[in-house]
Length: 284
Ligand SMILES: [Zn+2]
Image (tube, rainbow, N blue to C red; front, side):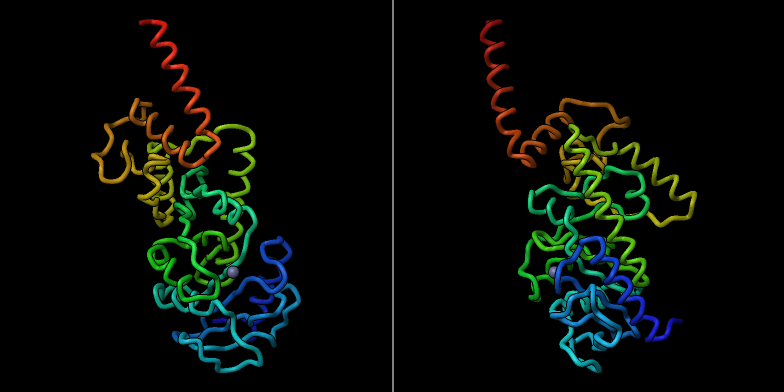
């Protein structure tokens, strides 16, 4: 088991890396480690995390009471406490403001679609928690429905939340999540992107089973967008027939989700409708 002084060194190292990657600026972000059941080591508020040292860290309990330290603990301590309360096996929490992941949430584009094989293996879907004002208990409330099943969550218009058995795992998960956002961003610049099919996802899960990797949660709410659950019309509909062929319903679902997701496609939908109408009139 690591000593408290080693945990302090690890948190400082992780904060420097997060700042070095540009995923926090100035005094943003917060990182914590669970020392024992009701005791955490957490970054202070109002201090630049890229220049922080080990003595700046605060020991607090899960109610936010300071046990040791000179400064005030992070204003997001309730968010951290919620993760530790809901997930006894979690021993580290990292909250940052990673550029691409936050940009996607501002654009209203979900990263819950399964685009890349390694994400199916390691993270499952990446849900986006509803917007809540930073530094309020509402942030903790916003992640409550996701934190039991996901290790990586985007906080709408705000940042990221990643958890793990130790601080480097929680950092790795942040790195992976932002990498997915970055690849997705570049792919969208190059053209339309297609999520993995339900058959491809199932195949990946079987590969993971053989490796002994735990199955990660694929969000039900992503149904309409990525067909991950094999349902044609989204949650609540009967499962799709065997096979993974393109059907009219699936195309319709994909078109409607694309239109909702990207307002610039509204014009394309209007034009398509006009063309279809003109063709029908010409035939008639
Ligand atoms: Zn924040």
